[in-house]
Length: 226
Image (cartoon, rainbow, N blue to C red; front, side, top):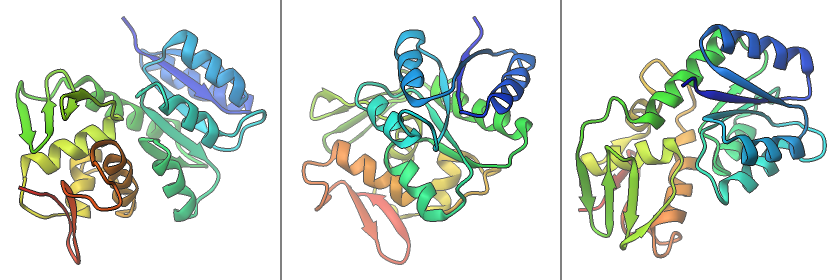
């Protein structure tokens, strides 16, 4: 069964152009042109991935992302004309998995979507369970238990936690973590890792302001404490 992509943008020609590329690549496509319609389609149609413009009528992309993240871990890639690093980090902090600035190549968008979906499917992950402290990560099922309770993570958060657990006790640089979560072909800001770490701590730490599991190693990056 073909995977479904929900494309959300108020520029209809852009949506139609992207949809044509995705259909050519073997995907099914859905379209929404404002934030409220995007939420309705995401909840009704259950897409496998959402391409979400930041600037939308009715509800902006940030609010759509926030509302979806309350109940869903569906992969979200932000599409936006904003190119400032601060704007990008805001999108990641509210739960987006990736960020593509306009103007972009439709082929690049399809390639980035495929990369996120590969991580989501876990097709390349070995059957294994990683454990550290109160955290258990099932790589095959892509599920996470924290203190015995199921925790919903985005695909990027999951891959980030898995990378830290694989190297528990060893500091990993932001560049290493970026490679582990996005692939070494991804040319992004290393500070995006800080945004994902902030989200991850909020979900798994007892006191996110004073983390005991994912700790900062100043001048290096982060590590999962042994």
